[in-house]
Image (cartoon, rainbow, N blue to C red; front, top):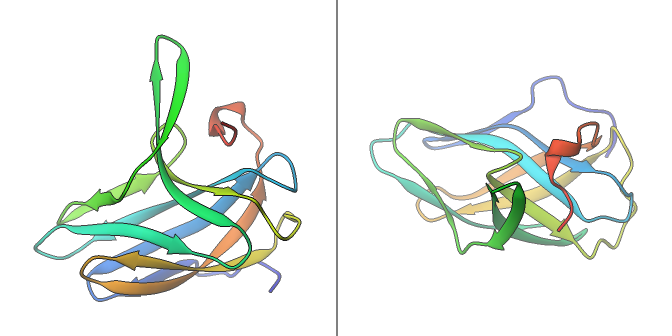
Amino acid sequence: MSSPSIAHQFQKENININHPHIKFTISSGPAAGYMTIVNMGEKPDKLLNIEVDFAVAELHHSEINNGIISMNKVDFIEIPAQIAKSLKPGGYHVMFSKFNIELINDTELIGVLNFEFAGEIKVVFEVETQKNKDDYTEH
């Protein structure tokens, strides 16, 4: 797939995913995936994992303590009810590694987000070159 879509959001049941995108510095990875997930429901949900066919995808959390960045794999990301949860630099994100493709700016890659209650939601990640060192795409 190529060329970014104009409306870049995906929804199933009470879960809305806005602007899923992948930022990279080196075309062979690693890279980080970001998006905003809005839970419009009355109960929390959990993002359990992400399935892709172009890399290994893991849920991670970044923290900065005393100027040192640490990233750790997490089992899930809690999506509170009636709240927007941003997966962004310096917080929760998707870590992509072991790519079997070359990342190319302005292309699109398909993934499936798996939620505890909403189930599977197919999304299209827009691929973007990292322009800011604060994106923390490297471990």
